[in-house]
Image (cartoon, rainbow, N blue to C red; front, side):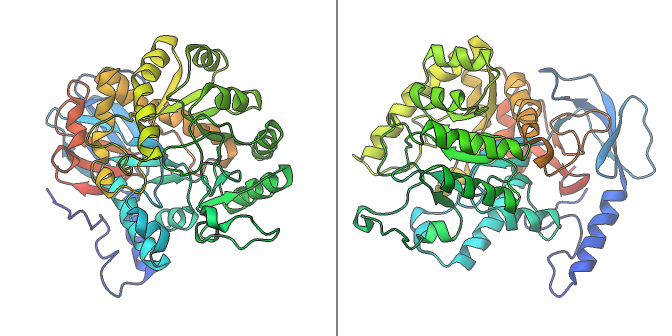
Length: 449
């Protein structure tokens, strides 16, 4: 058994001084061509909420070659000892570029420093067991390329690019003293760094949507309502006109993909659905009529377990943002309960941002779902169901193959868990001790089996 330090990966020497890039790529390719046999494991397939009996799983290259009894391998055999093999976890509302940044650094730090922080964030996601993420806004295109080229460890990324906001919208970052805006105003640092884009009118919306697609966006992110962390938009406001939203949806559909929207209220969400939006982010304040409509029209609800607990979003005491977060958390239980009762397609995401303490506790977010779901239901949501949402990117999906399941020909993103996470989902809250193997694309990034 090999205990790999969390800042090291399987291909020895990838990050050691002086090795050429070509050597690193060759080492990864050699690893991905090998066979790995998991023997005598219980399998959480992703399609069911239950575990299988003891069986074997054979990985060849970057795919699962077979699942069954008595399998043999010419490569390495990992004894399961009745532990559980599950698909890699998926977070469909992540912000890799600023999830672990203090707010002050996000606004003022050297961009080169921020890139290093972002690289560590990507590794942290992977070492927590999240092998895939849908990034819900931020300049992750370069980060994704570096991970895909195996220059550094990290999850698969479905990038959205810049969050699109109207003037005074959720992603607006200008202070009031920057108004009124000149016709050809200077971009803010956050706009220059492509974290966000403030756009007004159909031509500007089309331009910025197409710019994100040009860079490789898998889907587009719009803010259609107020938010907790933004300073100038109450939760109840509705943002972007119907024509603007339709323009974004149409431009995305022309590229075979879709628009995801930030919003909390019935008015904002119903407008977005009227305009063709298929994925609603948050929605904690939705009423039963809107949720029922979403179920009838096959709309995804990407919901987060925002609560008044140790992982609450940091806000200034007594501020409007604190009051907005209180309002959101008061809707969390009702939104989950109604969505489950009405049979909605619910996805799991964390939406940790500008919160180093929250980032350190990312693994605790999935077990919060035990308030509303069984362990098997929550685990299915974070694997198979989330993978179905990722697949909505259609031809813009950046990785070929089936994710979120353990079955023949699926991509080999798997975790070996010390114990039964269906019976005790809280095992996943301690990945350092309870994840024995972290495998992504057939390569082992953590091995204490």
